[in-house]
Length: 365
Ligand SMILES: Cc1ncc(COP(=O)(O)O)c(C=O)c1O
Image (cartoon, rainbow, N blue to C red; front, top):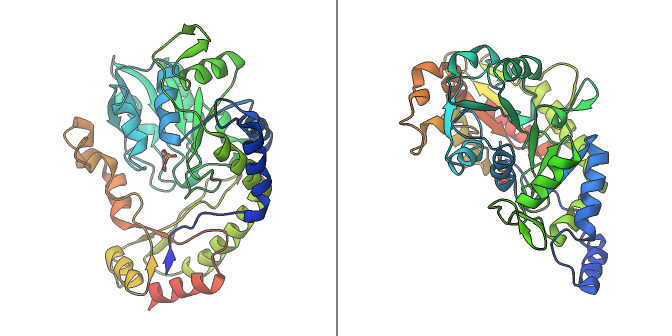
């Protein structure tokens, strides 16, 4: 069986000393030694100023919106994982879906302005598949209309543009360290921010709102990452470059084998980036290829290869959101079209090239 992804695990024996240290200290959570160390090492690795670790990416998203006191309406993309929109719902915010760009699958900046109303307070774009959004254009709109900008960078661990981390963009960025992500801590996540005051504010919010022992400054949540997750993250960091390099080999193999097939298109990466090879989405055009996307999906499944139709259905088509005015399929034509064609192929650091070859053979058969 080959799955679309498989969590990277470092050698178990190298994890034991971390566990011994936790057992000795009896410090299991609440900003322990490994938590502090991971925040420091991630800032260095990613090239960002401040990071606040979370138990998962969804809590990081929910807290980011709280930290900036976002209310009313937020413009976001329907072409993402549901958590990108659920975080708005959990904050009592109305999501406003904006169509996406045809080549890069990220929010289309040309369509954002038309969706702004007196209630709009922020834009929440997603670097989907780790492909960076058009920051320059989006930031200009945010500045012009005085909107906050929160990036869902769950897929974008380690991605750089023009030599700098894309997590430095906007007001805040959130990361996910879920088991399926490029960098995982079993479950986990983070908010990246630019100044120490905001970092302290976020740290308070993820700890029930406690500012100090006797002061609760806001109705915060329990979003803390524990010491086992943080220790695991520190060990993972030692292997992350190798893991990304292996993903790159798989990605290049697919690219070479599939790129010239009429009716199959690989994702166009934004220029001047250092990519993390987090996903390998292809678009299957039923008019030009002999088979539909779903036929290819079923054929692969029948042979034990489990691809995923990320991100189909669109978030805007799920029950909690489909009644919204902005969920109308007629105004999300590009996203609807991509969601009908997309298929994410298996990619993970220890995927054998022979397995990738098998995937390609079945697709082409
Ligand atoms: C784009 C996106 N945003 C948010 C999340 C939520 O992250 P988590 O699973 O860590 O809560 C995920 C993935 O799971 C995601 O893919």
